[in-house]
Image 1 (cartoon, rainbow, N blue to C red):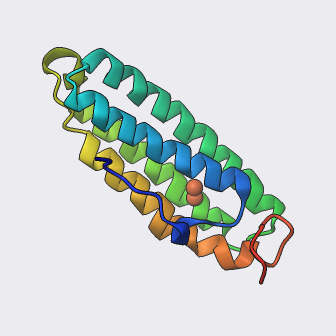
Image 2: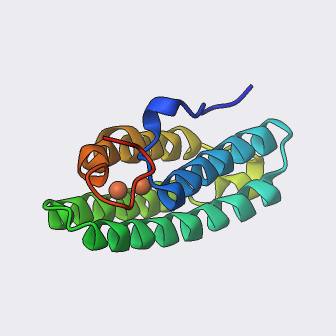
Length: 139
Ligand SMILES: [Fe+2]
Ligand SMILES: [Fe+2]
């Protein structure tokens, strides 16, 4: 069983953004699966990888939005700063528990954070992207 499931309604229409969103969700699902197998070291490695993937994604997305002249780019960047802050806060609070007793208390928070980013925050630019060449979706 997966923790997060991708749905077509999450698609922004931009290939890079959508592929990265799917990749972020898979990392959470991998962490979930590894946690169930009690592979703490591997969970920790995945979590570090997820943070890097998230940072790269947010940067790439901001670049795409600025290319698309999205009018709320600045506000959107604020949601990204918040997301990174929340991610690191959850990790710090968690204190690398996965390495010692194979528990991953930060996982539900990280999953919720990703869902907020993809489903709540990023749906804000879908209709704007559709008016540009940066979306595969036709308006
Ligand atoms: Fe995103
Ligand atoms: Fe975003």
